[in-house]
Length: 119
Image (cartoon, rainbow, N blue to C red; front, side, top):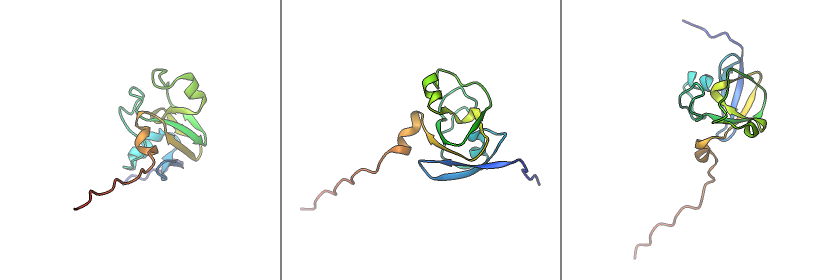
């Protein structure tokens, strides 16, 4: 049996409250996928699609590889936006989903339509 003894920190997805342990040498996305968790949208898992775009709300990350300007502009990067597959946590991290798939996570519950009346 293999025991993963790498140092880990907690990562929290702000919109869902989901928290998972992520090794400090693995990407935020791979840490979530390793545990079979959901929260960060996953695509190619290597920086090519931009689906896992997140904003780091709290904490600090280590860059694991380049982030394409096609997916994260310089202005976005300055606002803490990155790809979850290209960064690893240095300490506990809170993130928000910020990419194309942000909508399902930030949609406020709207009014429930009334049932048609039975006349």
